[in-house]
Image 1: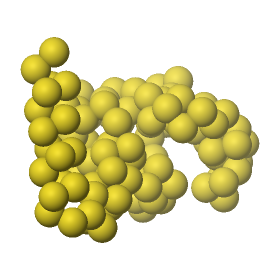
Image 2: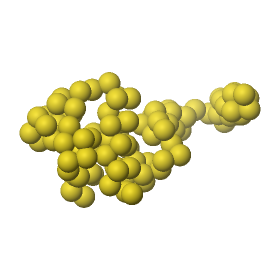
Image 3: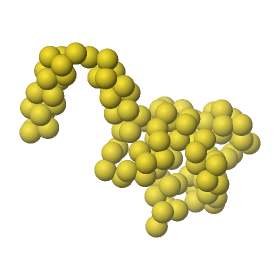
Image 4: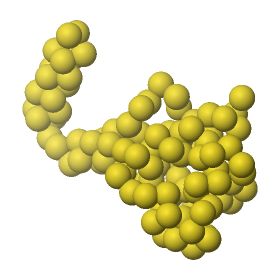
Length: 103
C-alpha cells in the first residue's frame, strides 16, 4: 500500500515540478535511472533517499505522505509568504480563499 503510494507520489510531484526523471535522479546524486526505477515500481527509495527526495521537492515527509494535499510544495511556499504579511492582509487573503473554496 505505502510502496505504491510512495512511487506514485514521487511521479506526481516530479511532474508538478516539470523535471525529467533523469534530471531529478542526477540532482539527487544518483544514477540516471534511479527515479525511473522507483516510478516504474521496480525499486523503492531508502528512508534516507526519501528524505533527500522530500528536500528536493521542498517539502517535509509529513507533507509527502499527506494524500489530501495534491500540491504540498506550492502550499508550503504560500504559507511562508503569508507569514510575512500583516493581519489585515492575512484577513483579506483568508476571505478570498474561503470564497474560492465554496465554488
